Image 1 (cartoon, one colour):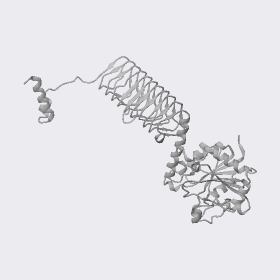
Image 2 (cartoon, helix red, strand yellow; image 1 turned 60 degrees about the horizontal axis):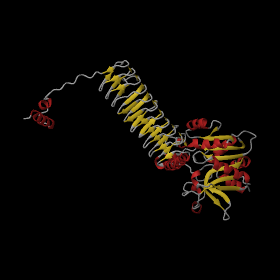
Image 3 (cartoon, helix red, strand yellow; image 1 turned 180 degrees about the vertical axis):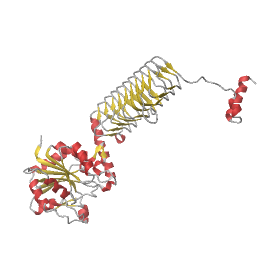
Length: 479
């Protein structure tokens, strides 16, 4: 049910320079979705009356993600005045006239922050008498965070940003987690008092806490149970740390749902993936995007699946696949490369060192070894011989090959598209098929073998091959 007295402000205007990237920090992927998408999902789960997202740098890119993930959010562009205080000031001004309630402020770079933690935080604020409440934490390393300053009696007094902190304040291990909850009326009043008189020349939202204290209002700092929940991302190292933590949570969730993960440390699963009970993931497996894996399937080792569908009981071994469908009981690998729009029918096989692209391979059909199958359809129960190439490109356009059902093709064939091979047809080893093959026919165009006796001894005299040939000839004649 919608919390009619709650508004959420998501701060997404930071430049993220420490990422050293042309891509905005909040759009870097984490478990298959942008960092900010995790925060937007949490905001949606709280079902607030109003959500406002503040953007600035690369605003169009960020706004597009916000519009997709949380379309009910109002998007505000931060102006030239820097700082989180200014961002919140602009967001508050965008709230509907006449609305009153609590304003929750969260940063867009805290992807592990969950709705359960925030719900408890909101409840703590509402059951107390504080005009403003801050979420705090005790991380192993407080570097980079604002410090929670308390009196000798332990009463929360203010927040000091690291660049403005004294040595004594830097020694404090309780940090500001960047999550705030204020009553709207008090927040509006104190935002109007903010200045840029600090080391950064910014309007700090943290100064609102001290202003509330000076005005005689009560403020509160509520520690979170686990510091990792509020870990922010400012650089690639923190992105890597957060990715590992999030992946461990995702993997454990699937383990508890009945998925066997042999080596959690080397198995990566994206947030949108769906795995059935009794799936087995072997070491080195990456399940990316919206991949779906049905019950009984075994994936890995050393396999990457991107937006694939894996059928019940299928086996995928040492394979890289994108936008592919592998139906029930089928087998793929090892060392297979499945490109988009590959479909392998039930109980079919794509074997070692096979590449496929835009290929529909029917139930029970097999491409066992060393082949390229592109822009093709293969019927049911056909066998494509080793070393077969579907020559689909003429230098200008791609062409289609249609292979029927119950076809048997010889090793080292080339199918020059466009080509059709009818049901039940055979092709001989080494055949280059340039014309359609009727159903039930045998196609063969290899020239008769011609043996030129004595050629090596005549044309390669003095070589080891010539010596061996001469010795063999002597043995055969009995001389």
